Image (cartoon, rainbow, N blue to C red):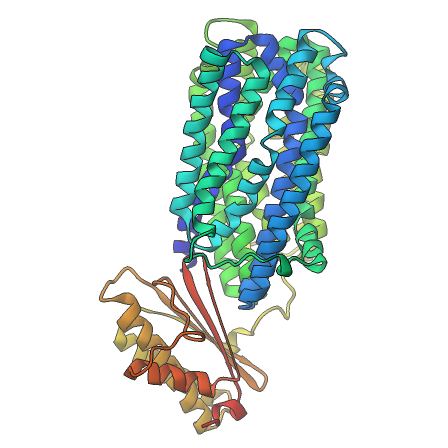
Length: 584
């Protein structure tokens, strides 16, 4: 089932990674086509501020993934709703504050970014900042709502929202160029309005009756806000490192080749950020699923997640790298038609950038996994090394020997060195033993249930339901459980799994039901996970049906029952003990 989950989530996560970079990509194309080289440089100088806005939105989104994957893993829907309400409230407060700050201080900010104090470059930089910042609530809101759409299984709506945003941005940019002649302010404003278009699409779900999340001002709590902020801190380190890197690279390139080199870097970074949606995508899947599996203490699931995501990282990184290498002239030509020095620089830089995509994807898988498994310090360390320190150092040193070509090697050198540091750290933690994919999980020896205390199986037919119930009964007796309790556990599995296969599968063979039986001291935990239509047996049991009688019997025997619907999956956890199984 993890294999299917990864495939389902990867496309949506990759597309969601484009929610910010796509508008920036479109703006860059329009600016380069219609406003000239100086405007491209102004856009590049404004980029660190834009990245700060994206960093805050990404921090909140990551905090949502960490905090809500924890509550979903433990089956606490009310706690998930507190996370949803607190995230929305915090996003609105921060985005409105950011909008006010940038509007008031846009002139000194433009100077700080290297645009000078007056002249065309200064005017265009501050104008773009003013137009773009008006969309801060929309851009941050889009980023924050993405993980909630993923958890609710609304991947198709997410795709529609991204497409709507893209169409709106292109249309508004063209209107700005040919009708309103709004210059750089109009370009920034077009992006702002397109983010609000994406928000409108997303809110059609959250304001509907079928939404699994409930917003309430009463659910907003300082404790939850602190948890969201703490969960997103590692992402802030990564995004803040990106801001520092862009600033350093702009300074280095300004000294090497002036505004021409900065313009080339701006084009390179715009294409690079769009292509990096694959690394962000695998990282997003890693963060969400590792958080859920970690809080379920599912060691087997984490191992499978690590193996599969590592393969996807290699394949996607190699594939996207090959595309950039082969199509570099075409891609750069979209921004810079005709032969020029800035075009030649950008093509050369993009081809060298492509070499770093494989290690970048692997780094994102690992640092997101460590964030999801609560190794926050390690995530922060990798983020700083990969995002700023090592690439900045590489650009500074290599540019002294190879000029601008040396500076273009910043990405591949930084990513490879960061991955090497992680490998050396894991090897040290493993005590020099041979490294395997699961070695990188860095789990405690006592993490999760011992293999001998765990039974897992996938079910597709009623015959397999009967076989699983029989095997579970034998499994319980092998662990010294009395016959009465073993029979009740087998009955729970037979009733719940049969109900899913009969009513959930509906005769289709493409559905999955995973059953997990754990022995924890005196307690037994049964976990059922299926990809059928949402059905909560805890709060809704149809009266008068035979299957309902079986479900009510299971509820009566259980010590505790928790249900959540997330990632298009029904998740039901049932805890039983000899005492609870003996209830009438």
